[in-house]
Length: 174
Image (cartoon, one colour):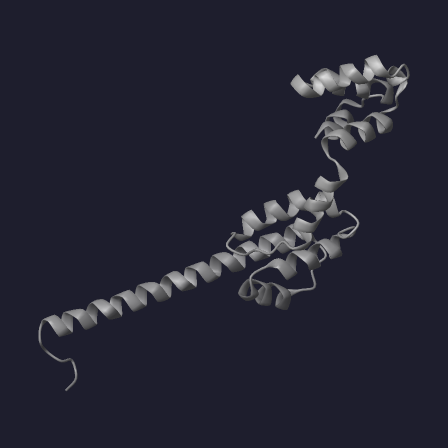
């Protein structure tokens, strides 16, 4: 998010650290003040150095590895397609090498979809546009949900008719 702000503001490299550290609060602000007190070269850090030190502190490699493993095992499960896509996108940043291309991103997303959704989605195309893939999966999911709802209504009506026939003591057969 911060990188997006820097891009929009056309922020010069030498101002990025000042702006980023201005936004730090509580423990993170204390951490930065301790870096300044302990390291005489801290004010001369370039953005990449600062970012590396910050990420090592607040996103240790064990955390990133756990998130990457979570991404690798991610399946739709009980999630809706929209929820699955949000989780997939959130975790994919920890596995950027694995989903380096748009087609890799699509293929891995497809593999995690429910079988009935995946079957329909993969029959349509070999996806290379993630947004279009997600949109199609959402439509397939909606169609499946509507179809199941229709069948539930039909079965419910049939049970009602059967109950009525039993309670009236009559038989509908000739």
